[in-house]
Length: 49
Length: 499
Image 1 (cartoon, rainbow over the protein chains, first blue to last red):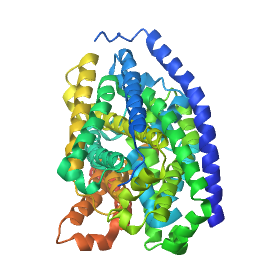
Image 2: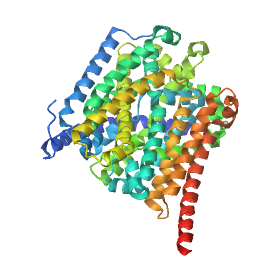
Image 3: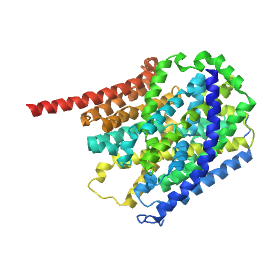
Image 4: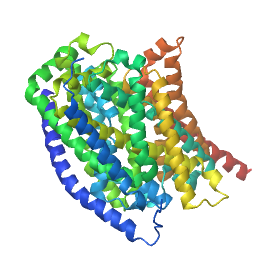
């Protein structure tokens, strides 16, 4: 069982590090696309507060 | 208590807070409709969805209960996370329930139930979801405040006299409320992303440091010494089978109906993206338990019983305060603040959304509320929830493990809502009698348990039953109530028609 938990821990750290980098970069572009889509939509009344 | 938290660390934390508020407020101008406020206009794409879900579901409260779980159970405390990974993978791959839910184009789960079971069920669902959700969330702000005070070296015995806890809780609340109330889901998504980056980097650095300085073998030896074989295999624990079965039911129900999680599916651009978010985020939930769990085990290895004191929930932050060097402790606290703010903001919005969309639905029925009015009312609701967090968190005397409290309060609604969702999607004979019965009986057991736990006359008896048995009973009884109630109506009406 100790070996199982060691393998899960190693995989966890490696996976999480990779995911942070990958999601960080791709997520940034997702935000840009999302805000652009909302801005160009004809249905948005711009909040003038 | 000795700590390495200094002025540099305070500067790092302050700078990060400012950055978060600026980012959250910057997107406010894109909020013009209720749909933008609650589900970001359904423009959330895959990677933002993953970052947002990960950030929302990792708060200080997560760190605290997972660390406490592993402090008290060793590696067996990670099992709920593994079960959630399995549940999320299965649901994401198969689309079980989440496909019909997203295809329906609803903003909340009770909205789906109205289409099948009628308005009364929608309203009751909204009430029980908000009841369970707010009781569950009620301890978030307090736990966050305790973590921040402990990890920066404050003495818990002084919390009450000097009102340090109230002050820190209020500061946290105001910071979160500012961008949540004004920007809604859009602000939550953008700040979630920022918080995901800061939180992930700081967590990874701390974990690697623990493994490098303390080492894997001493951690394993600590678990072996304090918990024996049960520290590695949950079935060998006292009430081990109950623990695993309860968490299995809980995690499937969470994946299907926990509003904060399912909201990511409902906010996704398409059903396919929603399912992909689940598949790609699933392993995160093992990491979510394991990483702070290692910190809890490290606390057990390093701290003496006198240093830990009477409350095992405080062990991990006390450990971090003395273990981490200046600079890194500031980055970690900024990361934890990030995690906590993303969690608090998302949950405030989540429960606020259910109140507006479902509980207030009958009041909106005959009147057309403008989008501007709808956004204003949502903001007001979110503000009220913030105040509830402050007062409930300071008042409620937590008994037992924090994870067990969260599991029981969540079960108030998870047991019935998961049953209703499965029945709604896949059983044509399900009807409102079954739904209402399931809601009532599903809430009865966990609420009953919480009350019995607090009353002096029944506290010992409740302790003997334990949270796992009462939790399992909730799921079983909710399922039976749905089946019996639905069949009863079907046969009574059938008999009446035949007669």
